Length: 358
Image (cartoon, rainbow, N blue to C red; front, side, top):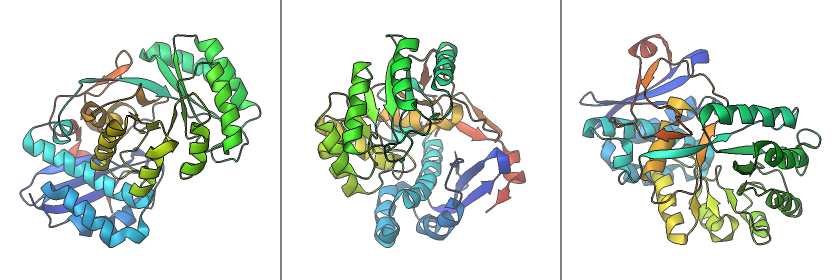
């Protein structure tokens, strides 16, 4: 199945999409990351596309290994995010050709539905107002868990808003009740001593997970926290180098959270999921999306050998204005695998005619 072309189309405020075509006319599509990485189209065009056009789409793992060997100086989330966009589109195309969902290509469907938690992204303003907004969304969606932000996102022990962390930890439990599963995400905000102190607060309120307490690439510092606390420590969304993952899985994280984009695609994430299962670690991928944008996460989670806890669903929908057809919906706190070829998402042909080609 020879890859003939890629088209990255920019739709302005509607977002971007990528389409791959085979020499025989088969197609696959994916939505593109719309919240960051605006330089990706150029990176994709210069480095990723030449590595894949003219090659057999069925040999993705071989192409990935050769791609890394040729571009190892660039290695990191930006390189692997560019690659992952191509991989998602190719997997969608292969699924359509095989008349099978992508999850089947990843090793088989192990579960048909994925329970989700709401992922709150706020860490400034009034924490009580944010907790009240969470409560409302829990009622609307049927979800039974939420992840809240603590710290200031790489702010070196400072909150983004005064007194945010202790208030959010204490009041989340008090106002949401004992039946709601609570996770906390620091996005690398703390050094080890401060993270340990915050972990004690989380443990006192029966939080079930503490994500990225220290800078994500400092697995030594994170391991210092893991050894001293009871709450499971999670992380890995920004790890893209495999030796970093080896270190992360030998003492830093109890739960690994590779991202289908930042970590280099679904094939890499599945390899990490298998390794986590072998080591007895939790697998809880990072991918804050909603509705049709969450399709890759659903396929990854339904194919993974094991899953830990609830899975991520963006609390505040970001409208996807690219015209598309999809049956992906959050229903009673869960997302079901859509029984359709590829990822089960079709982009309206009018988008490709009207969007700007890059």
